[in-house]
Length: 224
Image (tube, rainbow, N blue to C red; front, side, top):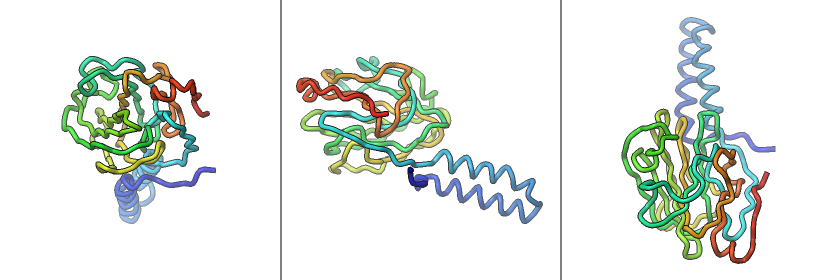
């Protein structure tokens, strides 16, 4: 059974709603306090951080977030970093877990933050124009880029990694607030293992395999 916890980024929201509920309850009774109590419950739900059964193997790329696949294939023109990439984009609704996980093991070589617009996270141009945080991971000489992208409701991303950190696939590394999008850019030789419209789970679903594993005929299946 998964342990109950919430991401630290949610604590101020929960505490604020509880405080307002207490103040309203003391001043006017339980009825005026009820909306704030419900809001506190929503924040507890939104910032939930369940444990996951991470079973990573060499060359395997895990989903960095819960959600539904928007893009799975060659990178959309202008969306990715310079060069040729494969792209997997995942849309998170407010009902999804918003804690983000490292997609692949390796060393973090770059962490960047880019201010931008607040287009809907599912919009075609969101990857290139919205506010975002990006990490680059070197996996045995192969670069993997994970990008947290804000949306209309998600106005802030939290990234807790620093350049030089050694990470393992499935590690928690940040959170996005109130509906957003996660993009992963992979070498053009990577084998994509998900399709558009598929539901994925952060830290568990295999979304791609890097070429070293493909050449070795390892074909991991998504973990249910």
